[in-house]
Each structure stands twice: as C-alpha cells, then as structure tokens.
Image (cartoon, rainbow, N blue to C red; front, top):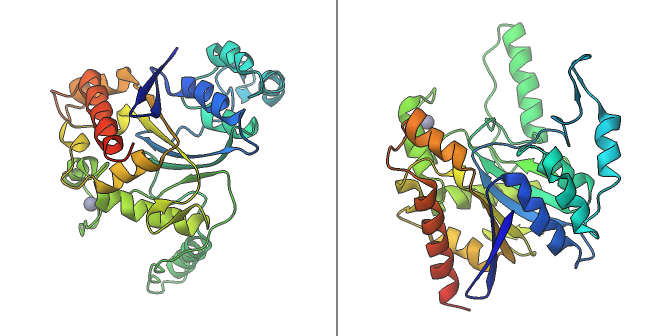
Length: 292
Ligand SMILES: [Zn+2]
C-alpha cells in the first residue's frame, strides 16, 4: 500500500491514495511524545469528516457520527495495523480529520487550489471585514478597505491557506487567464514564501523567516501539479529548503486526478503521473544531495 524509499538519508513514502499516508504518519507519530506538524500541497482541501462515506446513512441522508466513532475508538497510532485494517473504510479526503481525531496530526497546513478563497479558519480581521462589507451593502455605504496583513487567527489543528490567484495578479476579478499562471507557481518560491509568511501569522513558533523551525512532514499530493512546467519553476530554492528541512516526505500519486488534468481539462496533454513522480524524486535527490 505504501512504498518506502530512502534518498540521501531522507525517508520518502509513496502511496497511490492520499489517505494511505496515514500509515507512515502513524508510524512516525508512535515514536514521538506529540502529534505531527504537516505541510500539505494538494489540489483538494481534503477536509471531509472522518469516515463520512462509510458512516453516511442513505435513508436519513445524514452522517452517522456514532458509526464513525465506533471505528475511531478501535484505531491508534500505537497499533498501526488498526489503521491499516480501516483504510478500506476511508476515502481519500477524510484522512486529515481522522489524523487529528487520533492525535496523529497536531497541526496541518494545507496549500491547495480548491475552496481556498480565504484562509481557514478565517482571520479575525477578515471576519470583521466581511461583517463590515455586509453592513455597508445593507446601508448603501461605500465598501470598506480590505485589512492589510499581518492577521490574527483562532487556534486550530487544520489551517487552509488563502490561495485565490498567483502572487502578483492584478486582475479583478480573476479569470481563466489567471489559472495556468497560478498552477505554474505551485512550488515557485514566490508563492511558497507568501504561504510560509501566512503560516507564521496563523500559528507562532512553527515557521520563522520562511523556514520551519519545528519538525514537520512534507506531504505532497501529485495532483497539486497541473502542468509539466509547474514542477520545474524558475525559482525552486524554497521548495528545496522544505525538502531539506522535512523530517520525512509523504507522496500520494492520485493518478486518477492527473489523468483528469491532462485528458479531461487539458491543462497539459503531456502531463503524466510517472513524469510527476520521477520529477519529484529527482528534486528530493538534488535538494538533499548537498547536505546529507
Ligand atoms: Zn488572477
């Protein structure tokens, strides 16, 4: 289910489906006194409740939380086979909630392209701004100015980072012409540095000066890449820094989505999962070669 590789002494775990990565995460967690910090790069937000699909009652059309909880109480990172045995009951967008509920994940930061018009949880300044916008609209007043960073955030285990368009876009509103440019910034330092600065605002003492200062796992879903160009940006320094600093790297192939990007959406007809995997492993080799 999960293949392990060691590249210049960096442990890399590769799986087909994103939720399989709970297995290496649990294995790492069981040797620690606290949950993991994870930086996740993914097309999707993967924030569905634990065992939503398994515990969804088709008759009442409701999530049967008791049914989900019955599985959760059987599972523990101290007994990794209890997680392996339940992988069959999970879908590939439920693992974050499961990881948090099992205390495998302490903090996860998700950079994604879907459902990320705003940070989640929403910054206090943005929540106030949205109220002010509504008030201005209701009272025919001019709209308020968007507050400038830094923002302050409620405490959370899972943070999704605002990723509405590429760094530097001036189009208003953003349109289709923005999309490929945005995709191609996926691991460009200009985008990653902006996100690391936001993580520093979200939760202090995990990131400083665009570097993680605590242990973390770099988790990459290959469907984060929509074009061949996106995995070879013109500035890769920050991505190499993340690879170098990560205690381990987990990769989900999610071939089905890469197939959609190339054949259905035609973002790049030459994009294949094999190309992406080979390229990411090459990056890991190069980023770890210098110092390991
Ligand atoms: Zn734009």
